[in-house]
Amino acid sequence: MSTKIHVSLEVSDLRESVTFYERLFSRKVSKLKEDYANFRMDEPGLHLALVKAPVSSGLRKGRIQHFGLELNSDEALNQWKESVESNGLKTRTQTGVTCCYATANKFWVLDPDGYDWEFWVRLGEGSQLAEALPDVNQKEMCCMPEAACC
Image (cartoon, rainbow, N blue to C red; front, side, top):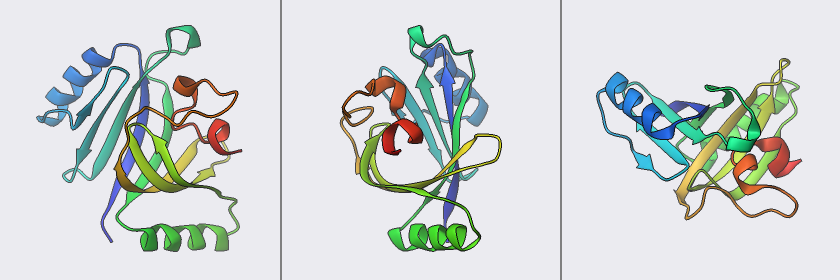
């Protein structure tokens, strides 16, 4: 089964961070938007997302949003979910959601220290950072499972 580790970081200066990671990994950014960028790499098997922190958030530079595992099929996603649930962990499921300019099926698991783990299958490109949800600031909820699903 082919997988990629996923790390999503909040950054204060998106352009500066993109330049740094292009130098670090010796490759160009895979996707670049005004408020989001990502590096999708097979070697190392990593999907690194950079999300521009909202100016009003007061969050410190370099805040970790969440970790994840990008899978290659819904079958693999379901196998992981069944395994996680059979081991007694609670999951939160999202189907066909748009987040970080991609559409995906996913589930989330919260670790004891409050770090979210996202397991997902990328279905295709998305045209926006996140879906518009009632009573949720779109830029604050992108890839934030609690606001998006619970």
